[in-house]
Length: 210
Image 1 (tube, helix red, strand yellow):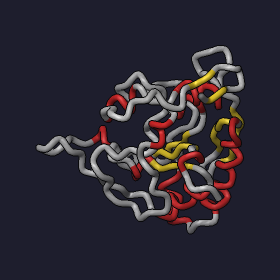
Image 2 (tube, rainbow, N blue to C red; image 1 turned 60 degrees about the horizontal axis):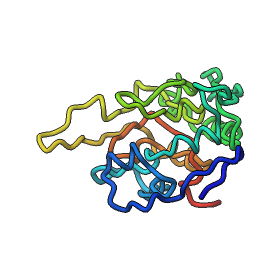
Image 3 (cartoon, one colour; image 1 turned 120 degrees about the horizontal axis):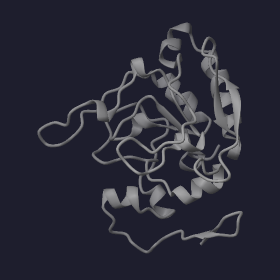
Image 4 (cartoon, rainbow, N blue to C red; image 1 turned 90 degrees about the horizontal axis):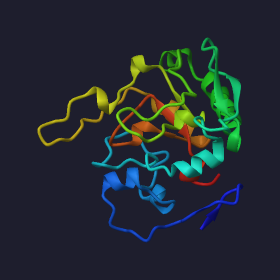
């Protein structure tokens, strides 16, 4: 069992090893969050079908880590300067997520100006909402995710599946941007079969230790 700060407990495993992909998403335990190994540092490429490292989330755990945007203790947020020319964003202070984002920004600012178009304007951070077309809460609801400029990004729900039902992966985000986020504990939605290349979320538990 995993004991949370309020004394409540979450099971590490429910004993099931035969969950379907939909069951992993909708009824996960802690172990299930690690069902797919996140390929940090790998060149951007089309993932295998239903390979979504990081999309499996135990919501009770993230409410304990960051707060409940629909409850009495919403996430604590702090204004963080975004890249030059991009103003600022509000990001969670829980687990040092805001400090990690500041480190990301410092490195993004050192990139050539040709990268700015992918980053500015940002498409948002904190938003108390569910993931589109689901009842599962988005990492934006915890203030621990940022979307970059949608003008240069791709998203699986914006395309039609092929005759076999598969979605054709595509990406425009430079690997230099992805590498910077991953160095500081963020995972990238472009690593997912259900790709969301604008999306980065703070998930250091899925990345190799420094």
